[in-house]
Every structure is written in structure tokens, then in C-alpha cells.
Length: 302
Image (cartoon, rainbow, N blue to C red; front, side, top):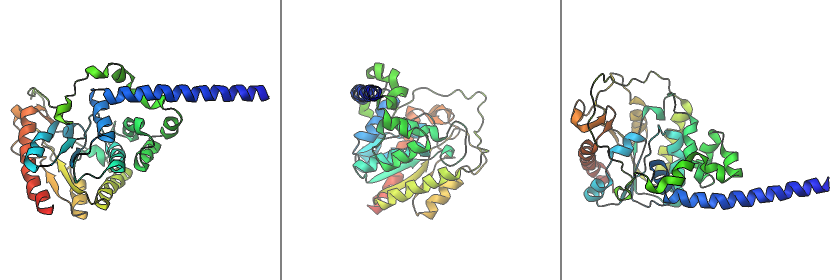
């Protein structure tokens, strides 16, 4: 029995050493990757110290040009958004990690219905992208616990990177231009054939709604200027899709920039890559417009 116990302890020790050593290598590869997920998530969690951050999912990723805001507002900026239907489970965990390192002056949060509605393909699993940063903040760990993977991630460092292995092996040849500070432009013009408005016939998800409120409260507790924004769509639903975040903004007395039906963009196919994402030209025009709005709101506050 004693020999068996010794063998078990030796195997456990070897596993621990192998896991930590391999995990260290994977961490280095992750930090060097230029693929969208790994670069964006890694830099946002570990490196950015910019004064203005944009947070959200793919529409935020493609729509906000940091250089426009840096020039117009005279403050450093990073677009910390990521694609893949990232939702409030991801955003809240990311915010916790960022605030564990430093406090930005301002955050603009691009909201999507998946942040408060029980939409398909947008559940707790979205927090899994934060796996490499398990243990970095209480908020991040809470989201990983909700996603049911916290303890496996704590046990194995290697396991945290399993979803990124292809990107880690070939990530240096990824398509992110780091000089753009997180913005990923889309080149091309949409095909308008058969385009219809996206509808959201889904109930409110109470846990998501609570996390949205906590996101706002955590920013306010740190003295961060927070604005909530909605980007334009090529064609829009007749629903009052964004009533929930509009009401939250009013409740907490924060600005709400609603460009959902912005006629500068709506119906103008030359400014869109697809029905929900602006192309390079559209994103530049939109960023210039939002920059002027921030001058009027943020500028008067600070």
C-alpha cells in the first residue's frame, strides 16, 4: 500500500511539473500570437494601459478606430472587443481582469441583445475564452465557475490553452495588425440580396441582466466614465430592441449613444461589409461621429 501511495505521489508530481512547464511555453506562444482571439484577449487582459477602452463583441471590434479617438480626444485608446458572440459573461470577466491591473479613465461598452436576452449560442460558455487568465481576478474566476470549467483550469495550466492550440502553433502568421490597436477593419461591400432585419424574440435572462448592472456598478465604483453605445445596422427591426440597456443607462445616469437606426448609415450598402458590420469606410465615418459625441459628453465631465 505504501509503495502504491509513493507511486501515485511521484506520478502526481511529474504531472504537475510537466503541466506547469508546458503551460509556461503555451503562455509565451499565446502572448506572441497575432490571431484575432489570442492577440485581442491576451493584450486586453495583460498589457493595455490605455485611457480609453472600447469593449463588446464583433460589431465593436470592427467599428471603432482607436487612431480617430486618440487624435480627437488626445488620449490613448485600445479596442478591447472580440468576435465570436462574446457576451456579458466574457465582458464582465475581462473587466475584472483589467481592473485588477489598472483603472482606465473611460470605457465605451457596445451592447448586443445577447448581453441580456436568452439568445441561442450565447450562454455561459463564452466565458471560456478567459481560461488562460484563470486566477487573475475574482470576477474572471466567477465567470469561469459559472461556465463549469473553473476547477479543471485551476488543476491544469495546459488545459487552459487547449482551445487555442492551432492558433498557438501558427499564431505568429495571424492577421491582426497590432499598430491598429485592436481594431479589425473589414474591406468590401455587402450584397443586399435577401437582407432582412434581425429579430430577437427571446426572453430576458436575469443572470445576464444582473451582470450588466454589476458591470456598470464596478465601473462607477472605480470612478471610470462609462458610456453605453449601439452601432448602426443596415436594416433594423421594428422592435424596441435596446430598451433594456437604455433603461439601465437612465437608472445609473450614464450616457447612452443609440445609433441603431442612424440614417447616416442605415440603408447605405456602400458603408457596410454585411448587414450588421460596417466596412473600413463606414467604421472610420462612424468613429469620427462618435468621437464628436464623446467630446460633448466625456469632455464636459473631465
